[in-house]
Image (cartoon, rainbow, N blue to C red):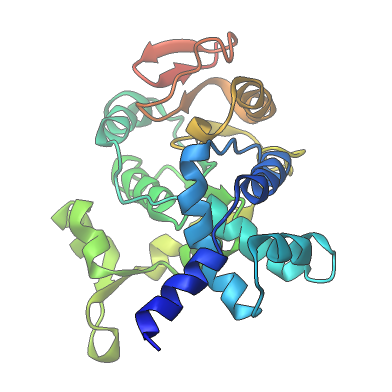
Length: 278
């Protein structure tokens, strides 16, 4: 028998049908507000395939029934992690960090803790970029960064502050030298965010589509590269939940591919993708 043909037959047998995709699509929208288009069908199939093989199941439908049965709450979180994890990198969309450095931090109140929330922090690159920016720009003014995400898996990675060296390609060299430790021996090819910086960034699991925990008020909220997955009603609800957490005069920053036009009229646009609370 041809082993290649056998593998192909297994993949065909496990093809994700439109009906099965619809089940995951519906569940993910209810759980996380994420609106998966049919174009994401291959992504869903690819990300869940290993879990189906792990349980020796014969279809995506069987896997869906497993995670919905209530018997494996841990597997439900695994599926959620797999379908909501997005790639990020250090100092992504650098104009936002330039704005923070040039327009926001110079006006921080001396002696009062300056707080920033990275509300879709993924594996930690954004909150650590923010931490470096605050450490560089605030001098003796105290500061704090909170990073949150729906995925427990990426939060474990974020808390570790440990990354492959290729992730450093967008990190300015002086900041890499000042705030990161280069791996040696069996850690070669990696780097670690310095503990002094890591200790000032707190990570917590938050589902933006549910009642938010009391995290206090923030001077700046970053909500970048997540609303592209929400439909308009969900965007409006998410922003409405976040707004009470933003101080008056505080800044709300979305990605350059996103806009609050038609989503929220309580904020004033001050620069492309940058809004301010009156």
